[in-house]
Image 1: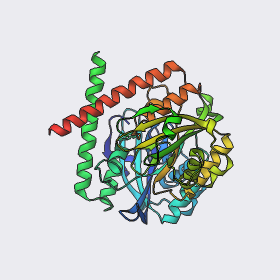
Image 2: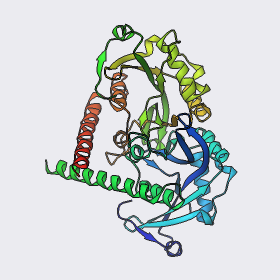
Image 3: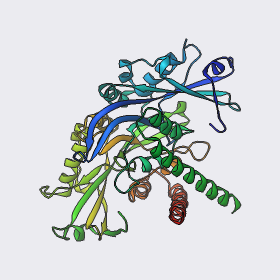
Length: 211
Length: 211
């Protein structure tokens, strides 16, 4: 979404019938696993999906008008995008985090965060290749590396250099900070990296336009 | 791998015991599916994996010294990285494509390309979440979008903007061209995009060093 701003949920729900509501969710679970013989503690697993457009994002989609609540609409979308593995949990109103409005396209995007057990998260992964939209709108599910390797780049910093849809990258970092999964200092360093990346891409684009 | 050059397979195999051999494979299958009600023909599905370091690459790994051939070593690695779904096919010597040598680290990397049926590829995807290395060295499998959406960026161009390990991005494009999956003109345009992106990243790095 091009130019977005935050909006309160109540205001978003009062927008009227000409607006479309997009819902997506960060599914995550505590994970006691370790990498490289214990040198890295995983702590958590967080899921994102590779979208049909080659960008990473959170699973979800447009809620249809027949859904009585946003959460039910989101659950329906998840079933289609991620398959039967999502039937072990319900998205509820307390999983809601924030909404963004994009006035030109008349779209409101609602972001949810859902804590699962590791077994539930694994069931989502196992079911995903059999989902209706697999290989079409969803090209695969990936876990987000939450650690930084010794070289200071591999892991989360390199992951954040990937292509993301809209503000998914920023929402990932903010959610990880709010949930206490990442320390505020780490998030602020990573955000600095993203700003620098965006500025340089902008510079290159304006150079390309001039030539 | 930092500075690499091509090497003939026979020369690579004669390097001696101090060298480590890395093998990886592009698994792909013809796919008659369509996206968006037939507006986009999929033609093929190609698999890549999200690695522990947050970068995309081809599945594979270091071949252990006990493997009688590179192909058997690669198959062993695939079983560990991708799970039981790989047992429906064998990697054979005719799947071999090219090798790269990295002198400083004494590593030779061998690239294979394997054509599967769509059912075999789906079996790999279905088995992957249960693989030994899933959630550890491998964070997920994704299909590569081989089309370009109407905006000229979404699809393969945006996918190529992601983070890739070593020369995986270039190998993907070359393989797609050699197999006739992408037209040479398309590949040349996409390569131009990558060169521009790499220059951008170099600029970012040099700026970061100056501050």
